[in-house]
Length: 130
View (cartoon, rainbow, N blue to C red):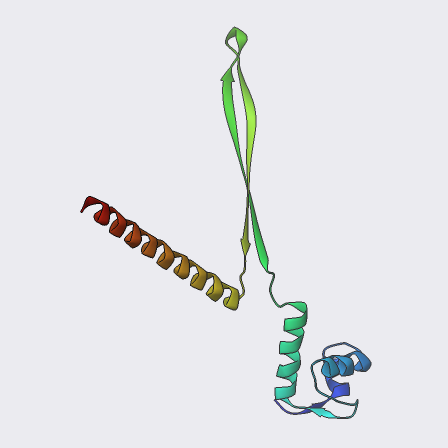
């Protein structure tokens, strides 16, 4: 990509020049309206904006409905049909990689503590028998 000016970039992405300059300043890049912008600076701005505003949702919610009909025998030989709707809602939470690492380490530490407790209990039982 070639270097473009702030004005050209603002017109390309259809935003005001002042707002784009402010976004660059928030990302730690000082620019004026006539300065040129390299592709590296654009990438830095994009990563900053994704971090600030979030590029993907943290939660994903799936909702499912299943409809069925149940025939119930009624009086006088007539059967009555009843509409049944089952709703299921699941929410998946997207975890931060660092948080996932921390949780895995905690689980590992808990497993090791449980194993040590089992070994200690076995030793105590063996000591009582002897």
